[in-house]
Length: 277
Image (cartoon, rainbow, N blue to C red; front, side):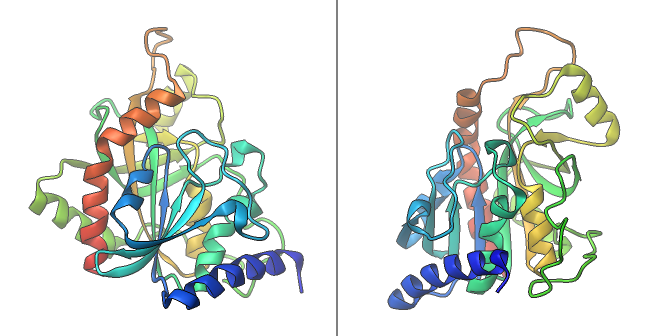
């Protein structure tokens, strides 16, 4: 067996054995970004599996990422939530950054909810706002480069509607009904780990970006390659610096605090949307 497939199956089989023992079969996967792990607290009757215990799994080193799978019920569905993700800037190859998504596919996941903390490059966005992702622009190496994993999907997957239009429409309806203020926009993904220069911020805005971050897109690409439907949301944790002003200094701890303050709204929207799938 190819080494990549062997790693995926080894990790998936370990988790599957645990889930079979408690009678759980997840249909929804959730990836929780920096400071957004508190959604996992809303999962009922949770089963926690630390990444460090899963054969072949990397360890999350980013600020605000606990490093666990949490499996249980949310919105009337069985979900498997990543309490922390893996980033390209941590030094992991794309194969490991996206490993959990392929493992989720093996476990039977049909829907993927991705979240992230992001900086606003749209001047109309404020810290604490939430944005439904309608599209993205990527500076990451494409995670599908290399021999195609035909067990999961085609050589040239279409990305026209990477973020599921039906799920976006449902989410917008929920936001209006519950009074959640939201934006809908484009996520720009850069490898990091440096925050953006003012010139880069201006360039990203001109290219059509509304927020910028260092994650999410590789996971979305692999999910779509696998045929998993995707819904994404960004929490605005800082406003990007357009003009070389030192007062607008970005700090990882501040990002986590801002994300935590907005996490309740995102959690509520995720929970209701999952209940409608």
